[in-house]
Image 1 (tube, rainbow, N blue to C red):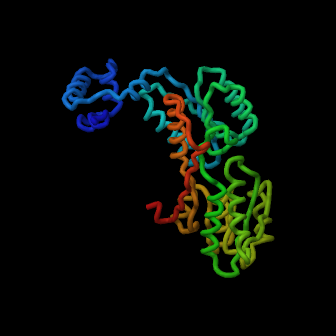
Image 2: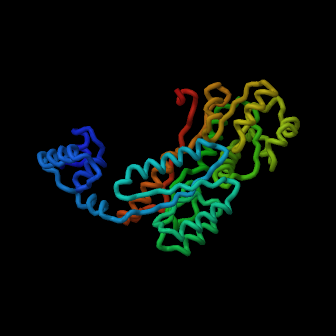
Image 3: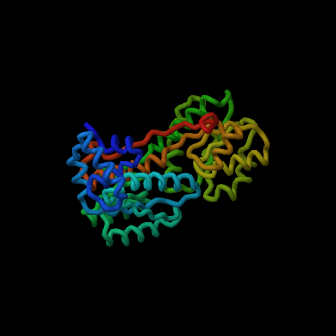
Length: 332
């Protein structure tokens, strides 16, 4: 069966251009339109009734609420994934309005969400900083399709995201198999970022606690970790400490330790950033366990499209993404 993709490939045009020509759109060069229609007849192309019905549906507006965090890579990749989904389904009138909120101002996100649901909107994709209040808004607007991204609320709302707890366990597993006997890892903890840090830490600690000779010192908690770092290191940085683990500010801590102590450390982290890439390339970090924010954003957009345009009901209440282990060779 001939598909629009086949015609597009033969004529070296986009599938969207083929679709426009076959649906009688005027927004295409006449000569290109004529070539497409002639080739379609020649190949015996028949319209896909599902595709045609999708094209006839009204424009769907979706608001995506994502987070501006200290880690620009995380925000940029999720946004890129959402835009990729929007571009893929743009022909059908699928539109994603992206709103970014600072991670430290969750009340601002809630205000923006309440404003959005009063507009012409059919879908909401959100990284919910205030979970219970976001759920209240969703319950008050049952005709709007909600999808959570990165942070799950409950089984009643479809979710796309990683398993941060498992990622923390994987980081611990790598570190356990890297440390020499009697070596210690100094674990530093600070205020939860409301997204991943607590789950990373819980996973890391759960795996470490399974070792008979638990190699941890800590976790040492400080609400103002970077300000208190000097005092913490002065107290806990013994000869046995050969590694540091933290879910927040790890790259800053690694750089500071390298500057102050100038000793080799075995570091395994969670998450990716420009600084993390540099430290891995410089062999100051052995590995990091990362999520796939681009894929998360893209799939959240795709699932929203399928729900709004195809009225699909998903078998599972969530789509959990697998993490990846990044080492130096991964970056070449």
